[in-house]
Structures are given as C-alpha cells and as structure tokens.
Image (tube, rainbow, N blue to C red; front, side):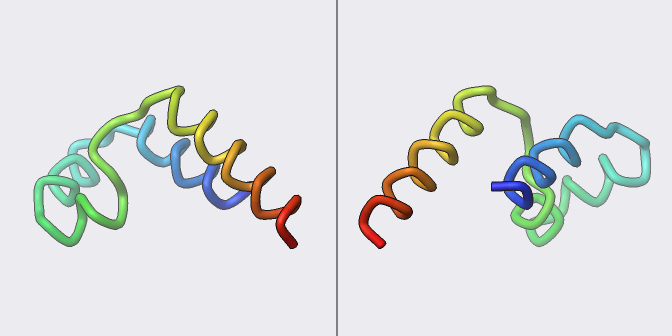
Length: 54
C-alpha cells in the first residue's frame, strides 16, 4: 500500500521536465497522468481483499 500511495504522490509533482516526460507513452504509463482520490480508495479495498483471501 505504501508504494501505491507513493506512486500517487509522484503525480502531484509538476515540474516542467517531469510533465514533459509524462507526455510520452512510457512516461505516462510509469508516472501516471492524473491524481484521483478514488484510486487510493480502490488500492485500499484491493489490499484488504488480498489480505483476507490470503
């Protein structure tokens, strides 16, 4: 969960060089295009389900 939330925090950073990197296909897939609070909720639910099924 820490890594997925850290990934979302990277999306909040908007320096010109990283925004240019996000415009590439690979950069967009690795860094993401936008931040949604619903993503954090979905990650949390997914982790809870994974722990329960384990």
